[in-house]
Image (cartoon, rainbow, N blue to C red; front, side, top):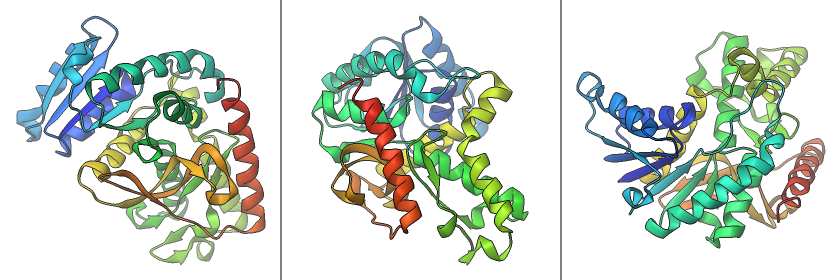
Amino acid sequence: MKVTVIGAGNVGSSCAEYIAIKKIASEVVLLDIKDGFAEGKALDLYQTSSTLGFNTRIIGVTKDYSKTSNSDVVVVTSGVPRKPGMTREELIGINAEIVEKVVKNILIFSPNAKLVIVSNPMDTMTYLTIKKSGLSKNRVIGMGGALDSSRFKTNISIAMNKPSLDIHAMVIGGHGDTTMIPLDRYASYNGIHIGEFLSKDQIKDIVSSTMVGGATLTKLLGTSAWYAPGASVSYVVDSILNDQKKIIPSSVYLDGEYNEKDICIGVPAIIGKDGVEKIIKLDLNDDEKKLFKKSADAIRKMNNTLI
């Protein structure tokens, strides 16, 4: 199996690292527009193979999309990362042009690839990819829900002092500080609702901190985070390549589901070898439905500035 990662910055290189270490693919191609940058990242990463015990071939290239040919999955991380004080939405004009060009070049050499979109604003970039490429909706997946859900689980784990692997929780809605919806009603510790261990105020604080999780890291680091995003991408790619059919909150194209049409937004979906294989319908209560509608309206407003 072959995976291409477009953009060899922090997120792209972390994604390539996790895919190699977890032995998800036999070959990973890192591509970047900066001369020598992807080559250097790839070589540095490849030199860990003997000590970390993986056989994944890692190649770095500058602008040469022919080296990405016949990729099974292509991850798009291209674009300008957030700076302190920036919202994901503020990147829309800059990154839209970049993503559109990248996707066009990808499909020349890998016309059958599944695309995992990471570039921000992620929901709009996922929608843009589907609309401009003409690809079927199952072949394009926005990664944001996997990342936001991992942050939600981590925050719950810290508050409860319980292993994060035993925490089950998800975030739906948009991948934005004001549009994501951490579903605390569905959050549990080994099947037991977190309300049995945490107060309402504690849960409220966890939800709030999850929603600004990316902004918090951007403020601390001076740029966007990369470890958790890279790991979340590898999680999605693994489910595709190995047909694991995991339920992963993902930004996917809705055509009537959740009473929304012609939009990409985060909902739980079964991810397998065909990409988005099924959208899972959650029984949202009235408050959650209102939040979801508000989130969809905000995303649609951004979409309308581009298409």
